[in-house]
Image (cartoon, rainbow, N blue to C red; front, side, top):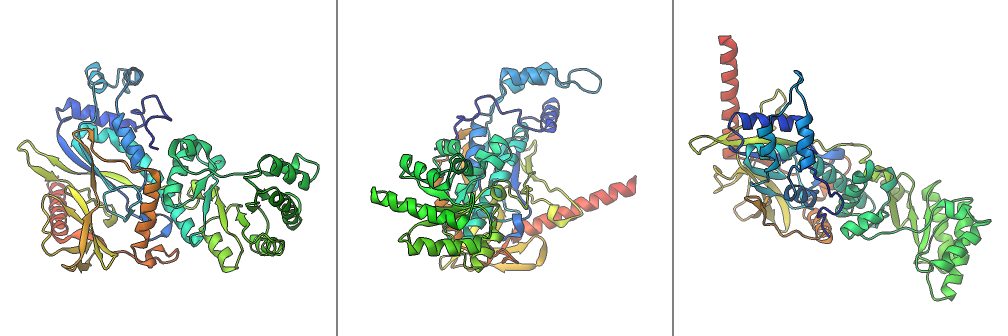
Length: 496
């Protein structure tokens, strides 16, 4: 299932920063609003000090672009805004222009579930500059967050060594949309199910859940609580055993499990939510096995993250299913991905592309000029390098990539390597041309992609750095452009 305006029915076009609108107004006043431009959305650094990121959020972004328009209430609100002189910020003719505005440009994007790396454009927007500008904030909001959570979920799945991860974060998420977007992204990243029922309905994610401590505490005894639950939901029994005494709780669960079995049902397992999870899971496993429940699962929760999971694995904890909430849906140790959206080309009055680069004293913040594509090379079933190239100028005969942060780091790709270009057409002249995969296909893609990379990129400590670089022609052009712009700046400073 896709998010086709089922959650938010009102216009979302004001989900933007005011400066996007003031710039659009400036373009319009200057007669530049329809000037063709190219923008790229990318990030500069992997989250969580990791070696990979999962692209996520494109479905939401497509929905936003398809429904992009300012409704009457939006126009009325914008008409009420004032400048510092107390007069309207925007003139009525501009508001009339916005009222008729629809996206008419082209979008290329890397499909969700693809493993991506810093500096690679995840989305390329080409069209009238005012339209491209007005999409910036929402696209960053959507793709930054969902890519962050999908990556965190993948790390959790790696830590559990493929054992199921259940996303339990709804109650701790950053608001309603934070919860829904996180549930979706977590499933794409590798979670097996969610506790979030609305996310299950909207996106088709499997939902899981049994009972809380309050259920146990509402009865006179734990045994009575388990028996009553089993009586009414015999096909959904995972008993939470740590309300009073955990190992006694396991024994009570076993007794109820035997009665369930006599009625033709099977206890699914137990859940541990506190205490020494390594010790308790080992002891619980003994009790379950000795009483004829070797298949019963032990589910663990309690503020888990990938580092705690790895530690529990090292301690030989007997946990089969991992319930992870707060630290997953809030990306606990890194609250933002830090993606950016930069102009890279603009068409001049003669119809020629003029490439743009943003300068900075920090090399990592110098943007890449051109109309960019990402080419991924494969040898013997493994991904070996990614090349960022300018679709208008590239020399792809003998591809050599150059690390934009270190010109001495170069890699020439073998002529025998196969390749694929990652950015795919999404919109053409404002019309959707992309066949949307379902969420299960996206999730499967993410798992398959991870298998195609060297295991070192999945390490949590000092991960391997996968080779990504600018195509040599692009690198040389960027360098020359930077030198020219710096020289112009120095000349102007000298003249002044």
